[in-house]
Image (cartoon, rainbow over all chains, first blue to last red; front, side, top):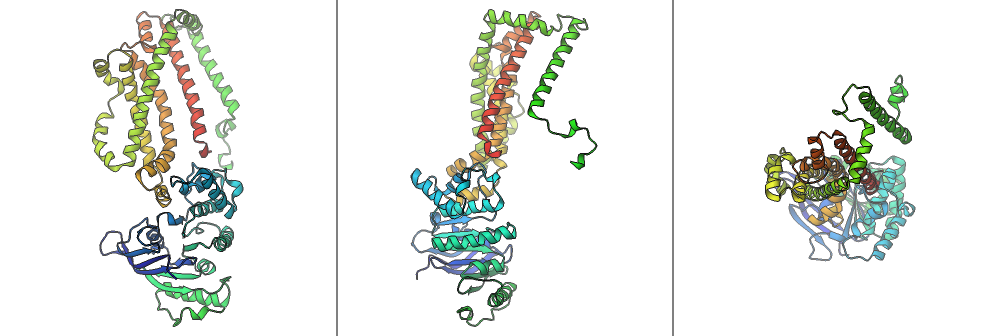
Length: 260
Length: 264
């Protein structure tokens, strides 16, 4: 299957010289996949997401899109930020509409997309409220709805639930999975939380080191994923080892967890 | 509020809006009564300070002679034109300098050079360039208002959370126009509005200054009256201006609260 987006030997250096944030990144994303990029804080996961989004240009290597010539994901990807980052002067409805303005959609089309997106995140009744009137979890849902409204091929999520309390986070994780099942979106989800990566993703890319490189690319196995099951605990141990810099002990990384 | 225990209630609690209004009226009445008493008991001679009770007849006199409405009309013209031109240019320049580093750097020197010069200092040039007329007075008022609104807008843009620009870029509004429309204008609105409100007050102060040079209006009328020692007429126009300012300020406060209701 042709990948939706492919990174070839991508590297990024902020000073344009020798000090790299990450390098030798090869990554291919197939349509419909749920991928987690796992790594310690400050390793460059969020920056890699911005390269995928086209907000940051790679210093080396290529970002190849399935459609061919375009060098940026542009309107085909949408980003959910860690801290929601809503526009405080816009109501919930107008925040969700943010990415739909100025791209030639009719008013009716915009309204329908906003309503669909708000319904998906369960905020249809809060459309007229201001961001300051929402809880942290609700704000983050609006951030998700804003990204979904663009109807992107690729949904990029930058530790979207990292700042939330455990209960809210658990609820939103379940909701995200149900949205993913309903919409079939391709998701790339950045996190430093092993259990979150295991719970959500089909595939976990481990990013670690300085400069960061891909330390592992593991399939999680059939759903649902229970992070407390023995197989998943074993996977977590393996991920932890990869982050810590050990060689991957698994000879056949995919086979080991299949059929669980 | 245990931390504040021991302080009297009037020093700790927020006042209810109704109480505020009543207290405001009480303060005003005390001021007027003291003023009246000072004159009535001969502490100050009446030709140096007119009593409040003398103001009303003087007011009626000015109105029936047609001077009052003419002066107010002239001053309102200077005020609104100066305010409009000064704040439009000030906000525009402030937004541009705030959001374009090149423009900011280019104008930085000139801004520092021109900023300390008060609007009134431009009066000789205003008279030379425009004459003792509406245009001259408008020019002086516009300069005073310009700097207030310029710095308000400039500061408001510089204070914008930079992350919002990334959100704009991620959702297709990353170009200059997109940033201006979708981030800079709405995000700077509270600061710009505060600057405009300060400008409303500064504008009235400049009206008097601008008209003292002879452009007809409230300020000019005050100058004529004071040269004839008609202090009661001077006070009539002082109060007139205070009322006009209060009116514009309340109206603007109302509009700005509506526009910024997202702030809650």
